[in-house]
Image (tube, rainbow, N blue to C red):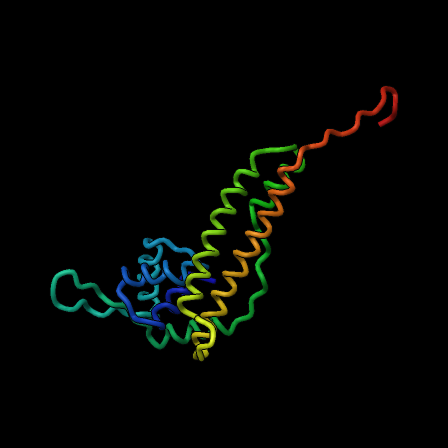
Amino acid sequence: MSLPHALLTALIEQSSAGSELARRFDRSIGFFWHATHQQIYRELGRLEAAGWVESLPPAEGRGRKKVYRVLPAGRKELKRWTDAHQDPKPLREELMLRLRAEAAVGPTAVKHDIERRLALHRDKLALYQQLEARDFPPGRTRSREAQVQHLILRAGILMESMWVDWSEQALAVLRKPVRKPARRPAGTGR
């Protein structure tokens, strides 16, 4: 996924000033595609230069900001990108490599990082569950768009649930006492 396509999506959902777009981004798309506010503003300039969005002149008065909206070329690009096939990205999780190294060199403090991460995953899971309870209560008929948004939130809930479960399992293993290898009697081979 790319930031330009994330911004096009957000702007199709609602035309916005840059600051409003950045705030909305943090509360929705930012859960699964992180971007700093500086990156968002820089990318808005590129999107405008590419002819995919336009900025409307600010309304009269103090503190008014220009609002960005998607142009037909931007909509066409987003459709093209959405239609493209993509293979799943290979897992590249540094924690897995650190654990593998811990297995090779012996106990390290990696378990403290996993404990910290477990707390973060629990917090994020609780937030996602709150959002689900607020925005998608059971028994309500929803539009296709809302159902797709709920699917995305469910993916986040499942992902955070997996990390909570995995972290708890990892900590159970890492907290076990380390057994020293059996000593071989002197004079035996190897």
